[in-house]
Length: 318
Ligand code: GFB
Image 1 (spheres, rainbow, N blue to C red):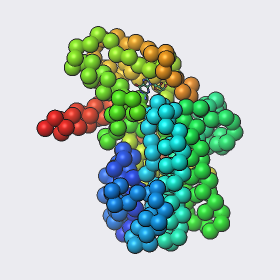
Image 2: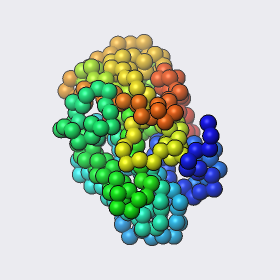
Image 3: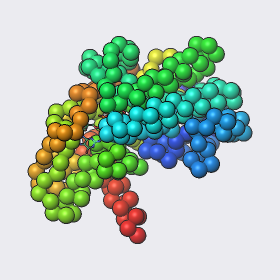
C-alpha cells in the first residue's frame, strides 16, 4: 500500500478516555505510529467540566483528538442510570469536540456505538440507517447522546471544513474491560460468572434474558487498529461502522465462554432480565472497501480476555 493520506507520525495525539478499554487499546496501538500521545487522568481533568476542558486543550494544543471518553456500561447500567448516560455523555462530547475546535484541532475521531441504529434496523445495519426508526428503549439515553456527538462532528465539518469523523464500533471486549457483576457488558459478565462457578464448583450458570438475541463482538485491539486505519485513510461526513460482519446468539456465545473458561455445568436463562435489541449485525462493506478487516477470532479473543481477567484477579489478590 502507498503512503496513507493522513500520516500520524510526529503529530500530537490526545486520547480522551485512555484508561477505558477502548482508550487503552488505542494508546497501545498508537505507540507504533511514531506520534506523541497525550493523556490526562480523570483526577486532573474531568471532561464534564467545560472550563477545565477548555483550559486543558488551550494548554496542550494537540494536532489530533480521539474521543474515547464516555460513560459506558451494559444493558442494566444503561437502563438503570438514564441521567448519567445521557447527561455525562452529552457534556463529555460537547466539551471535547468544541474545545478541540477552539484550540485549533483540525482532525478528530469520535467513537459512537451501534446502538445509535433503530431497534428493528434492517440487518446487516448499513450506515444509512441512522435516524430511520425508533431506538431500543434500554439504551436510548446513551444512543441519543452518541447521535448528538455524531451530529456535532458533522456540523463542524459543514460549517468549518475540519476533518471530524465518527466511527460506530460494534460490541467491544478484551483487556481492560469492566467486570462489575451488574453493570458490565455481556462478555465481561459471563467471563466472571463462569469463572466463579468453576472455582466454587457450581452446577449451573445464569445467563440474562432468553439467550436468543444476537450480537457481534469485536476484540478491542482489532478495534484500535481499525481506528488508526480510519485516521490515516478516511475523511468523510458519513459515519463508518467498525465490526467483524458476523454475529452469534447469546446462548451460543455463553457456551463459547464456558468452553474457554473450562466450566462443564449447565446454563439457566433468567427471563426477568431484558434481552435488549434482538439483533445488531453491522454492515462492514464500507470499512472493507477502505482495506481493513478484523483478525482476532472470537474464541481466541475470549481466551485473551479471560487471561486478562485472571491477571486482574491475581493483582487484586496480591
Ligand atoms: O452486552 P450487553 O449488556 O449490551 O448485553 P447490549 C448483550 C446481551 O447479552 C443482552 C445478554 O441480550 C443481555 O440480556 N446477557 C446475558 C447479559 N447475560 C448477561 C449478563 O450477565 N450481563 C449483561 N450485561 N448482559 C449495550 C448497550 O447493549 O451495548 C450500550 O446497553 C452499548 O449502550 C453496548 O451500546 C455496545 O448489546 O444489549
